[in-house]
Length: 148
Image (cartoon, rainbow, N blue to C red):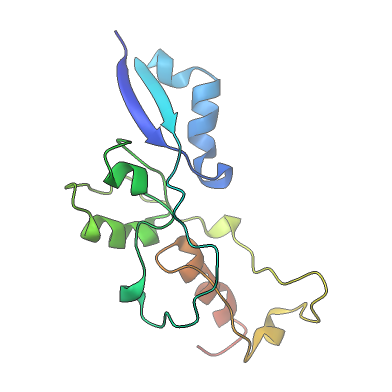
């Protein structure tokens, strides 16, 4: 009998290895019956300009909420945000793999924006979520062009 394991869904750019493994039957070949459960839907969708301190942010707003609530055994997320999630967890969870998603990030502007180079981001408000790879990735991408 296959061992059952529930995994929280994630964006394809982060969870592509798991999706391919499921599609190609690699989990089944190892005796694993994988069920993907829907990721928590409580991620904020609006800009909150009053949030100026990372301690104000919910570390489970984008990843890990299903696992934290007992609905999944594992979730896939960039290592940077997971350090905070593991610290905040009430489920005695741990981080078992580490990989950054640096290759998959981009800074986006509105189609009608006059900004088309990183240098033009100087003195502009850049919004990114706390405790996600994008938070650290945005700093990394901009620091070669702008002082922090």
